[in-house]
Amino acid sequence: MQAQQPLPFITVLVPCRNERAFIARCLDSIVHNGYPSDRLFVLVVDGMSGDGTRAVLEVYARDHESVRVIDNQGRTTPKALNLGLREARGPIVFRVDAHACLAPGYLRRCVDALQEYGADVVCGVMHTVPATEGPMGRAIAAALGHPFGVGNSYFRIHVSRPTWVDTVFCGCYRREAFDRVPASDEPAVHETAGGGDVPLDTRGPFNAALVRGQDMDFSVRLRKAGGRMLLLPDISTNYYARSTIRSFWSQNWSNGEWAILPFAYSSGTSISLRHLIPLGFVLSVVVTAAAGLVMPSFLWGSVGIAGLYGVVNLLASLHAAWRERSAAIGFLLPLVFVTLHVGYGLGSLWGLVRLVGLPQFWRRVGWTGSRRAAAVVSGERV
Image 1: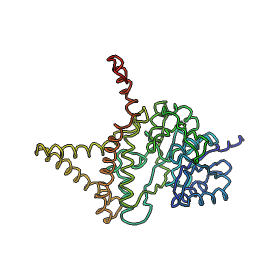
Image 2 (image 1 turned 120 degrees about the vertical axis):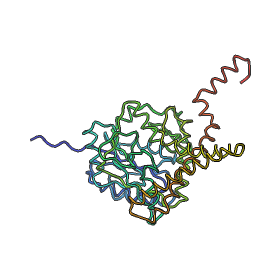
Image 3 (image 1 turned 30 degrees about the vertical axis):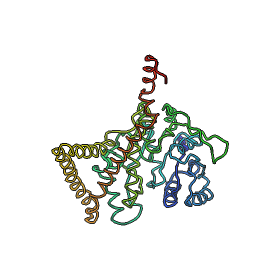
């Protein structure tokens, strides 16, 4: 009888910073996931946490031989991922968010699916759950799992069969996928580690300039290189969402802003249509309202757009409340959807304002070079 082949050695990268409330739950779901501990390497890349996270990590590193912690002086997620990939071991690498909790068997199922489907990346669906109990937390979680809230983000709204997708959450990557993808064309980022004289090189397959959206940016470049990403409906992760309207607004503003700023730092298009719809909605209301100051008839357009949104918002809120079997969150969901869409849209609008002031953007669109050439022809000094 032929001996059974051992499971491949895997690395699980967990970038984190100030995640004391979530990191233990995340690491428990990894080290107790059912994957053999002698085939598992858990690398937590900590962004110099100052909230007590490091004390939790030290306990896990002491109690589990498979867990190791390294510093991320750069403090952002893409820098953590690039640093972690240099230390990763084995032919398969997982990227797990500190706010996530893997379902039992997640690691093994993803590893098997890579071979079964010939995918480059595999992930399961996301179940968005409130970080703290209460009607507002439940309403926010419901909005983030509804198509009106997140569009066709399939890992959030779920699928009934294995589906090829444009990006993943808590993905399982073939190590070779990172070699196939051209490195980000953003210039090398050299920082000073800890205020000393040692330069910290944060280059790698993830664009170190993208504070947000670096996973989508990488996914775009992977698909251009022929890579394929698969979403499986039979495995899942829990994602602990913000549970206050203030933190939810702040998160969506930042997400919206970083839906636009990548145009200054990446030559690829790291967003899809669903990321631009909130900006289009906000712009349409603002522009028609501003035009109404000159031509009052335009005010009716602004009122019509806002009114149509209000009707759809109400219907989606009722549907989401019915799915959750909760009348209480039905009263909160209209506010939550407005916070999601308007916060994201205004963040994107601010991102546009910032974008036009960034020299990197104008260099990428060739404006600087064209102006210089024109100046040379006309004899102007530049």
